[in-house]
Image 1 (cartoon, helix red, strand yellow):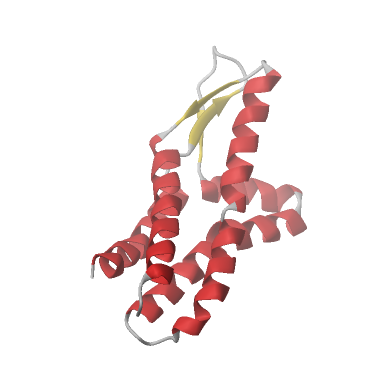
Image 2: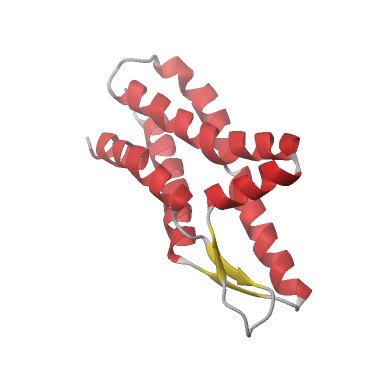
Length: 144
């Protein structure tokens, strides 16, 4: 029952995390910092590289959300447990966005010209991913 509730909460929390500020970045310490979210990052990516924008959108938005919906269907016996390996694969695709965020932060800090600060949305987004991994793992462990 707790897994169902946690998984359903993710259906609400994911869109909030996508719009929440992940980080604040600025070119120089004297200027204000611009907030960057998953959605604003995707907008910038779509403007500069459509193919990469499509791939990251798939991994950052669609894969985790479809996985969460699929797990809810399994929890409510509307989808066979045989779908769990496919949902697990979707979860692995969704982890690519965490790598991209970590890479972006690492590169930004390494440049030395700008300034970057993490924001509350990064923690919410990371929490959603970790909760999703936990729900998947516990669902796979349960007898059904």
